[in-house]
Length: 321
Image (tube, rainbow, N blue to C red; front, top):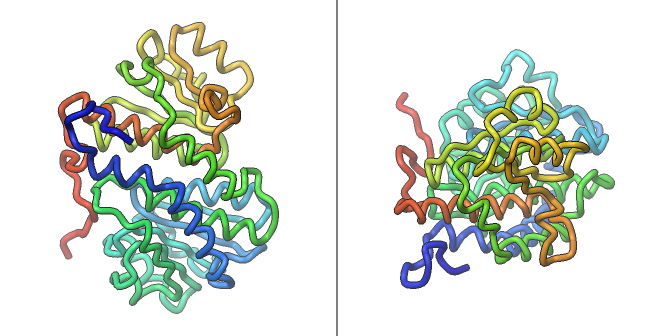
């Protein structure tokens, strides 16, 4: 993908990594097939935890698993896990790209010998290996960029593929999401989205976690004003921020009547029908997230910022003892 800043400027590391997601998802799904019984099994009570982007992926997975009827599933920020309930879960899954995140390591340590644990990371030699029962290392999806893109979505693709082993999901198969991702990495972004002054991301069910992640990408990479809400809650107050020059972006199905509400206040609506342009099909919400990632990079570059070096952020959060 050419740099959003135009010819002459090399693509950022973030931009180069995010366009590899179709291949990463395909490989993640293949690796899930071999992980077998270490992944949550149908009927188990499961908790999923992470920090930042990983927490949002945990929310998406937890909601998708419950919606598929595969078992009660809760998602927590790793620092807020209710330790008193640890034994009530058959399995706890954690996500940490670096495998060094302090809160994730502390959570796994507290769960040792109390319930089965699974850790998803990009580094097979990370400290998380010492405190989790099972580790899935998605090395192919590791990143140099501070801003997470391909590891987070590859981890979700891995978990989605694990769910597919136990029955159909209220979402496309990962193989179809890969096809959509191939469209998303190159389809032009609407000019109205690039020129907007504010963006609100919306989702329902499992796509609410994706909406939270989309908003985070724009804040991290470009330092812009973004918000995220459950789509049906948008009309209960948040719509007040929408107007000319402001975007409401729905990841996943568009709730009935919402398009008319956004039009009434003069906002710009981006929804699955918009994402289908050029491809003749509505994008899988995870593929639509790629478009939001690309927007984050484009906005950063248009403001003279380096998306590879977001203000105040580091690749991994390691807290002082």
